[in-house]
Length: 240
Image (tube, rainbow, N blue to C red; front, side):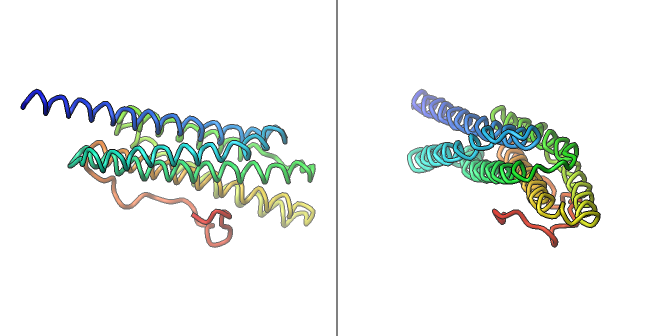
């Protein structure tokens, strides 16, 4: 009987590893989408932007596959305690990843419009913000795959820097619009892109919180300092 129980436990651990590997695969697609979308913007590459938009449905397909596998685990294995936390957290993580994919597609679409405007506005701030967001995203996906609470905490703490950069970019773009009305259209699109990046950072932080809870059984503090004081002025079109 003990041997049978051990076999069941070992088998479930294999299933959990497969679940983490599937999430890591989806995370890789999302990482690529964010990287390509921001590169398309900075490098004025319409073909790369179009490829990000075209690839977004693949992320949705992966989400559905993982969701089906996780639900199957819940139904057939009926996990409890730590195991249940991990499966439930996985279902929430893939929702955050799917939203990040959506934001990446939005950035790519807006970069196509900006390219047509032949805007000469500086992109250094957005580039810096994009690099930080990409680093946080990579770290948190590693945290999921490795079940590493320390990496999750590092992403949770780093989100403040993303918010600070967003506020700086927001003020700069408003200044550009006030100085020259011809900048308004391009700056408006750049404001939405900056907000998309800020929201990607927030979803990465959500994943960090979920991962920490799944591994430790404890929640990170409810209060996470937010530097964003501009949300009342501009909202990303995806609305979450």
